[in-house]
Length: 212
Length: 293
Image 1 (tube, rainbow over the protein chains, first blue to last red):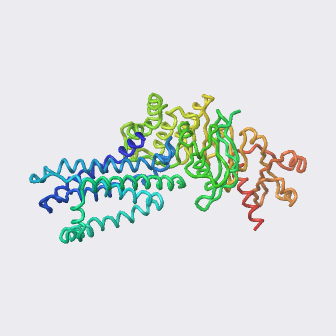
Image 2 (image 1 turned 90 degrees about the vertical axis):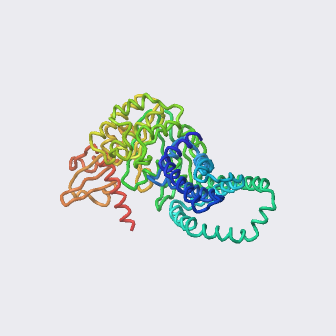
């Protein structure tokens, strides 16, 4: 597994660097647009989603599936490495955002732990949906979903989010405030873990049956 | 003699193509040539061997293990050379090596460096800046540097100039000096195999036409040349494949004694090259198919 994670890192080094630059720009822009800076983790989730797609798309160049699957690894491990690397990358993005954000926003009051959990869950759920679809439908799915996600993240989500803030998320905000955030965070993390494990099992099953 | 690989009645439909009941084996310590025209099923067979695709029926055993269930253990002992480049091209020779080496506990850094020097491969150059021949040499260097017992090569010499091809063939001959190593080498350049192969497996139209020692094949087959008038519906049956011209015929037979008895000194019998065996066998099958239609 370490070798597979190392392979992911080596094959994505430049992409990671580009995403880190993108993260800096996003944090800066978010801080300017959102004065109290409470929503700065939202774009981090969006960035993680694109990164997950980059992880999958990486193997399509030169059909590197052939290379990886001729090495002494099982397909289950190949799939597990993709999930693990996605989660690790998501955590690194969140970690960097938490460290860098105060530099842009000196009046920041600190970050709500629930926002961090929410961002982690958003990354985990995306990976849980994306990978089985990718292994099932292949690279064409990556191109189409990249396009749809781009529209979703940059054209639809921000106005919907702003509308949500305006209307206090149609009662959801009240409900969330009345519930204990710690309990919600634990439930969300547990649910995300279960969904991720189920998704990994499904992806591994699909990939094991696939002809390369 | 130990069998390193055993294909037993393996069938596979793949990409509109059908491999039909493949049965053959690879003997330990020899170079096995795998020949057949383009589209005959060579790459599909190799993909089955590497468990990149799954057989519909039949079984494949490698080192006595089931390829479907013990693929990881099997691949630990295989060095695989691809027909196409599947490396991450933006990595350097050294970086890609580090990635590959991390998968093999038996990785031999000294051997790899020796191959780099032997092939003149620059460690710091990006893979995308290597020529086709250099990429192939690099792929071979990686396959030979983890003490693999079985080297599988898919068209390693195709598209390479004669000098590089000769270098690769000489290297394979060296590898096989260690009697525990086996080489399986697919190609449609049959002259390469005439130099180094011990066994030949011939595939055409998704079927194994023969799989036996090269010397036996060359003993068994004869090219017969004679006048066209000698060909009757009865004598045509003596030939696996026939090439006819207004001036005569050239036929491939596996019944040289019967041919000599029938035609006596009216024909010339010669030992065929592997290419002639391949071309005339393919022609024979095309003729048979045409007649059936």
